[in-house]
Length: 329
Image 1 (cartoon, rainbow, N blue to C red):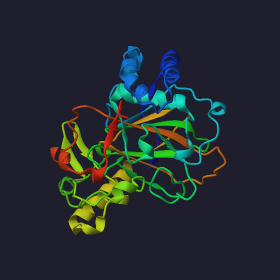
Image 2: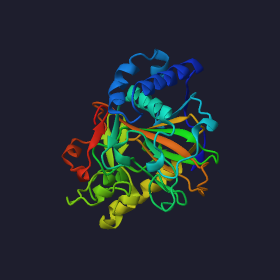
Image 3: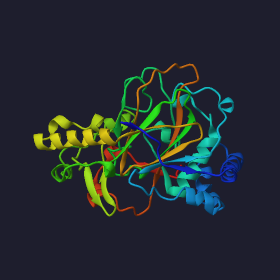
């Protein structure tokens, strides 16, 4: 893994002020950051924003498949303590929930999941007691294995947005782009084969109980701009695959590790990840549970008519999970 700067898109002070002022106005006019009425108002609100903000939030346009939007300013003293669990966060950092939803709306359509964090459109990612060793955002003691967000589902996000609220210990998010790898053509062909399924992760308890038979899915696909990817080794039954496929998958893991970068976010940074190209994870750390631990907010977005996934995905059952879109109750 390489420690190097991610591409940064600066947001001028006046643009940042306009974005957060609009978020504050939306929050003041609605009951909470989770209000369906607020979500329905997002497209109209975004239409008021200037071209400078739209330019900063243009599509990911490099093979890195990510960038850091920098220029929002979060005062640690105004945040209150880091929540001990997503379910206890309530309205903590609500202004930044709405700001992140505006950013997601400028880039696509925000989505949520009926089976994750009570259908919230902005998730609080915090270390939680009892979850230290899981492969979820609530973990801390273990490496969060690089993965595609919600890889088990055909309706997974095209874009993942991570807004840093607090990161006193400079804990790094890891990221690796399939388009930076040098995988052998024979391995690429192996991984285009649908051999084994990707199972729901531990954040989706209802999906894990789904009675439908898991269907095998490809790991790599061809798209107009190059290879795209669907990858989550922690929830892929690799031992069910044939030897040739497993060896190709291992070499893909090695290549992703070779090109991986470490991105240590500062408060106010928004890391935008192309979820079709980039896998992300997190380095291990020791949680203190004293209100000062790392705290991110996460949003996801669909991009309409994006030709990055095979048509066969539309026939998958998604383990019974439904993606919710902005405006949904």
